[in-house]
Length: 254
Image 1 (spheres, rainbow, N blue to C red):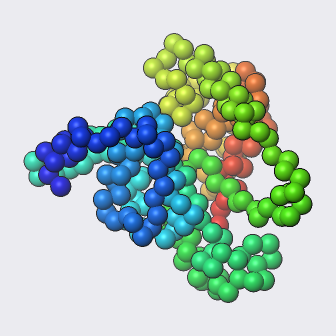
Image 2 (cartoon, rainbow, N blue to C red; image 1 turned 30 degrees about the vertical axis):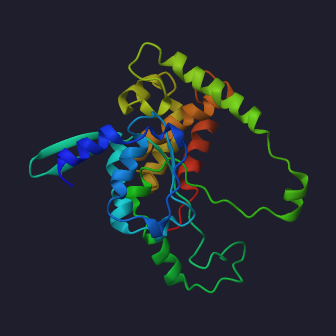
């Protein structure tokens, strides 16, 4: 699409605040997917953008398009007449079954997929893409007892805790250009933790073992600050860093 038409779309699109959570399904997405991400994040500062329950069913080209906006918060479109930059900050939620048939849970006795098929299924989510995903966890099925007991926290309680954490981060970053942990750059993160050198031990070991990239270091530190904020602590502790590292690497299917 020419840049002029992109500019026209920019001025005529309805503000996505009317749709705070856009749900996209594999059968309805093609190479224009990048434009959908731009539209979801162009007006609102934070937009939840879940890809449904079958992220590996999207084409690899579609998924790889997400790498730049996830890293830089913007999407750059190059055409023969020039280049255009569009804001694309959003919260991405990727979900996948444990295998194509969806039955490889627990001992996986009901699963009909071979190991090769399972590896091929998760290989569609490339390493560079997952390296930009801060939280990777396996969610176990809810059993009958858990459904009947209903032990989950009320939404109002969770919302209050998140609001307090946001306010703590905003206060900490009051004299900076940023307002959330996700915006803090690497050098600033490390300066904040300079008085606590022992906190980086788990991260350094993960890097040595090859479980964490240089990009992942900053993302783990941001997550550790968020965990500390949620717990009402002034700074991350060693367990906070360990939990942040576990949240990032716990979903490894390699």
